[in-house]
Amino acid sequence: MRPRFWELPLRDLTTPEWEALCDGCGKCCLNKLEFEDTDELAFTRIACRLLDGQTCRCTRYETRHRYVPECVTLTPDKIASISYWLPATCAYRLRHEGKPLEAWHHLICGDPEEVHRAGISMRGRTLSEAQIPEEDWEDHIIEDLS
Image (tube, rainbow, N blue to C red; front, side, top):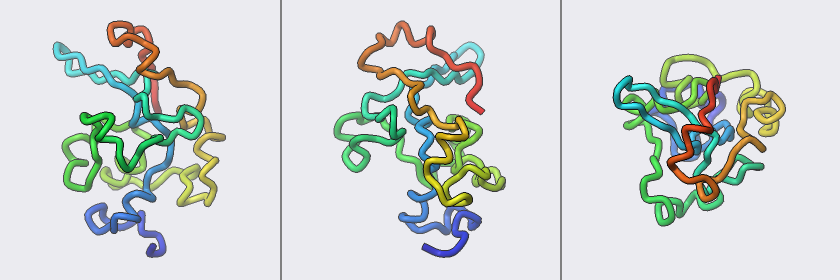
């Protein structure tokens, strides 16, 4: 990968560079509730059944669409239309908005565990969607994901 590739425009990244931009927080794998009457988006601590709550990584990333057909594949072409759906700390969202990566991001500090130590990730804070009925998800809204 190129030095400081994360500072390039997102469209200029190679596939490995794009994938490396992920900070490993697990927040994009949280189920969200969209309230049609207010257009509000609320994150819940209910995670996709494929998310490993300790590593904050998908257990079936390469084949996830086989198990979760509605899983969104984030691409440079889609980022503009769905960036609101990403948490404010997300590296993809930050770079889309022209902002730098946070100091805890592994590409900046060199340590993929720092996102967890900094309290940014969802490590140990999720419940699987397999355990919680969808009608109860409102009980698990997270007020602040920043």
